[in-house]
Structure formats: C-alpha cells, structure tokens
Amino acid sequence: MSYVDTKYLNLISPMLPLFKKKGDNLWNFRCPYCGDSKKNRTKARGFVFRKKNDLFFKCHNCSVGASLGNLIKHVDLKTYEDYILERYRCGIETKSSPQKEFKFDAPVFKKVKRDVFKSLRPISKLATTHPARRLVGKRKIPEQFYSNDLFLCNAFFKFTNKLIPNKFPSLGGDHPRLMIPFRNEEGEIFAYQGRAFGSETPKYITIKLDEEADKIYGLDRIDKNKHFYVCEGPLDSLFIDNCLAVGGSDFDKLEGDFTVIFDNEPRNKEINKQIEKTISQGRSIVIWPDSIEEKDINDMILSGMTKEELKEIITNNTFSGASAQLRFAEWRKIND
Image (cartoon, rainbow, N blue to C red; front, side):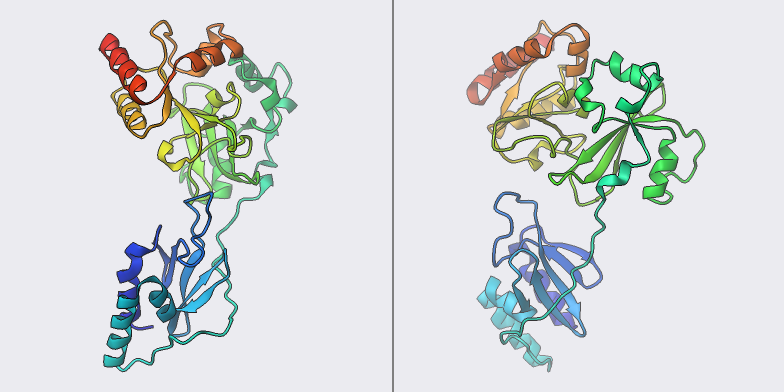
C-alpha cells in the first residue's frame, strides 16, 4: 500500500457518506454503488481494506467488489485521472482494470446475543414481597413489562465487568440495580440501563455493548410504519403505546413520523434549547399545559393520572410549525 492510495482515499472521503476510519488499513462508509440502506441512513456497509500491498473495496449490502482505483473512478472521474497520473509518476503499477470476484472476510464486529441477560432474573420471577418488585410496583409500571423488559441485577459492577472487562476497575460499593435492556429491531441487546434502587449515584447508568449503536430504547417493540412517540426516559416510554426513548441519544438520529415528548421542566435551559431546535426542524412536539406540575410521565401516572387521561393530554397539547412557536413562546413567558 502506498502513500498515494491513502492520499486519494482521503480526497474522495467527503463524497462518501459516514466515512470513518475503523482501524489500521480499514475504512467504512455508505456504499456509493447501491446507496446502502434506503430505510436507515445510519447504515454503512462499504469497506476499504488492505489485501497484501493494495487497497480494495467491498460492499456487504450489494456485494460489489473493486480495486481502490475503480472505486475512485466511480466516485469522481477527475480525481481518478489525477490518481492514475500520480501513481505513474511514482512508478506504482495501477490495478484499475475490472477485478475478478474475490472473497473478503469482513471485519467481525462482536454482536451481543439475546441471552446476555440469561444470568439475571426478570422482575416477574421475584416474589411479590421482594424489594425490587415492590419498587417497580410502587412506580406503577405495567406488569406486561415484568417478564422481558425489567430485570434484577444484584451486583451491577461485577455483571458489567463480565461483559466489558475492567469497565469498573474497583468493585467497591457494588450494589443491585434495576436492569432495562435496549434491544435492536432483531431483539438483540446492544445496551442496558441500570437504575439505582436507593440513593446510589448516578441514579441511572447506561452501558453500551455496541459502540456503533445509538442509545435508543424500544426499537424491538414499536411499529415505525405508524405514527410513534419519542420521550426521554425508558420507563416513561412504557406508559405510551408505540413509543421510543432516546436514553441520552439525540432525537436527530430518528426518522419517520413521530412526536417528541420532553420532560416537563420549563426552567431547564437545555430542554428549552432542545424544544426550540425540534420546532425549527418541523417536528411535532408536546408542550405540557401549565396545570401539570409533575416533571415526567411516570410522575404524572403516580399522581393518579390514567394512561387514557395521559393520552388525551398528549393529543390535545401536540403542536407543530407556527402553532408550536406561539405556544412555546407563551409557555416560556409564563414560566420565566
């Protein structure tokens, strides 16, 4: 592999969406031949990799394989001409003719199996008198989620270190937590959140098992072909039908027809900034009525509000466009 190859790969990188160096002699981006996934703009299955002394391209969506020269030629003809000329000047043989089909073992990114929680007990298996089950019941979380969505972990640090060695260098102060698994569309756990039962800090700790995945909760449960909702906390999402939670990620990562539900914290400057940004993007958004004092959905349920009443409030207080701007200005003025 020559300096010229890496130089020209970097030159065309602005034309390759999601271009990223993944390791030594390995680059990843959206395939310029097939365009990669039409449904998911974060999918990137095109790779440039080193084979002996040359760089090659392979897409694991459309299976196109090419030399680096042919990739550059496909992306930008003028850059390709400069590439050929510079290789000639450097005395490097150019392999830009069509290549025979070759096999490439793509880099294997560790996938987390469905049974990553097999050593943990679901809340449904605990006695009704168990402190963890009592806490979940006290929060009025629907029992339909006790079997597959909520688990008990008796030693959070120790459990995490088995999956990610030395994630917590010290096990001092290890403690139990309520475990909330984040699953992808195929049901595989790619992250999890541990909620403290007591006064341990921080109250929530989110662990990513797949660094490439966004921390979005509920992907395995919602129907994106229908209108859906997006709130901030995983537990809050369990009270709303067809709802995701961003879990510390960004609403910008999502696509589709959805309404954003922020926590009811009018004096939180960061939330106000996010609301303004969401409105400017043309998204529909819930702006809570001034009569509601609770800061999040779970607290509203605990105050005595039913799921049906919650749904009605959300429906009646959803705004977009100019109406959202006017309502937000009014809401902000009242709470200043």
